[in-house]
Every structure is written in C-alpha cells, then in structure tokens.
Length: 242
Ligand code: OAD
Image (cartoon, rainbow, N blue to C red; front, side):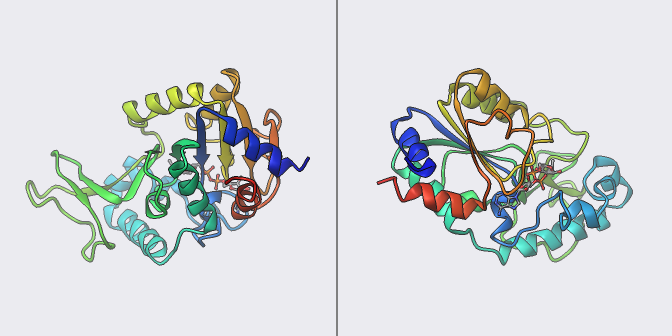
C-alpha cells in the first residue's frame, strides 16, 4: 500500500489529528525560512533584530525589518497545502493547527482552531499600557506609537530570550498529548519549547508524520517521513481523503 494512502487512512480513522507547522510550510508561498543557506538568519543577525534589547537600542531598525517582512507576507498567498489543511479541519479530521509562524497564512487559508506559538506579525502592542493594534498593512510611520500613552508599539511576536505566552504553550502541550496523529511540517525542530511538542506527542502514543525536505531531529522517531515539499506531500495524501 502506498505510504500516502496509509497516512490518509490513519488521519481518517484518527480521533484527534494535530498539525504543527514551521517556516518551511510557508516556503512555497515565497516567505523565507530562518535557517539554511537562504534563510533569514544567514543574512540578518537575530540579536540585532529579534530581541527586547535590540528593540530598546534601535526600535527604528527593528521596525524596518518587521515592516519589510510584513510587506513580503502581504504579497504572498497561501499555497495549496494550506487549503488542504483547512479542508481537513472542515471535514473534522484536523482538530488543531499549532504554528510557529507569525505570517497568519493558516487564518487566511481558512483554518480556525489555531495556536500561534510565536505571535502574529500583524499585531502590535504598546510596551507600557494595555493597547493592542491589528495592522492591515505595514505601518507607514515607524516606530509606531501608542495613541493612548505615546509609548512605543512593538510587534506582538516572541523574541529571543522571551517566554511564550503561558496559556498558549500550555494549550499546545495539552493538544500534543491528546493527539493520536501529529503531523509536523517544515520545522527544523531546534527551537524550544516548540520543539518539545512532537516529543510529547510521541511519548503519549501519537503517530508522528514528518513532512520536510531535509532530515531533522524529529526524523529519527517519526513513524512516517515524507522527504518532500509541504504542498507535494499534502496533496498526495489528500488524494486518499474524501
Ligand atoms: P527553520 O527556518 O528553522 O526551518 C525550516 C524547515 O523547513 C527546515 O527544516 C527546512 O528543511 C524545511 N523546509 C524548507 N522548505 C520546505 C518545504 N517547501 N516543505 C517542507 N519543508 C521545508 O524554521 P522553524 O523551524 O519554523 O522563532 O524555526 C523555528 C523558529 O526559529 C521560528 O519560529 C523563529 C525562528 O527563530 C522566533 O522568531 C521566536
């Protein structure tokens, strides 16, 4: 039997399938990944752009980088693989999408039960008060300021050295433990605590399916590995899902 059909059958008979995505999920939508030869971290220093210290030192520089990324994302479209995941949710197979991505493409492609572990690039929050803002487009004046207290607004994403939102990561742990099929797509599996999720799922007896063009630390314990692009693997599996 083809591995695609086997996995499709596993998904169809599952009671709680969870999809867990990283930057590789958006690569085919032309949004750059972080690691690897053409990754963002090969061109930019994360310590100068994605830490609270960097923001204190030079908020303009940090916002310039986020603005550039927002523009790339706004010009991007979710690829076929995204729509397959949202269709599986609509059919009741996928119960939760957990993503490390801040690009919002899961929402745009129709998925609804989403946990965004690292925040969302289109949200901003005041560094001093309760104010939050949703950006429809990249802010024209940077760094943006709070309309209430005039403090700086920062991107509502998780930076290096910052904890994840407690409620969100706790829920993600629960979902990983509860899953009976856990599909890991396009993550290098090296950034914690997110990288713990497939390990937890495995420990609780879930079937782990990895889709990634390269080997990762997850590959050794995954039950099925599809060494191919996200959209390709998802559409092959989808052929057997009615
Ligand atoms: P990475 O850039 O570390 O890894 C991307 C993964 O996607 C790699 O394992 C690639 O082999 C794989 N990949 C690339 N193209 C693919 C494709 N078309 N189909 C399938 N797989 C593909 O991205 P993440 O693992 O998401 O954190 O990185 C985790 C976190 O590190 C990010 O959320 C970000 C970053 O620093 C924060 O900003 C807090």
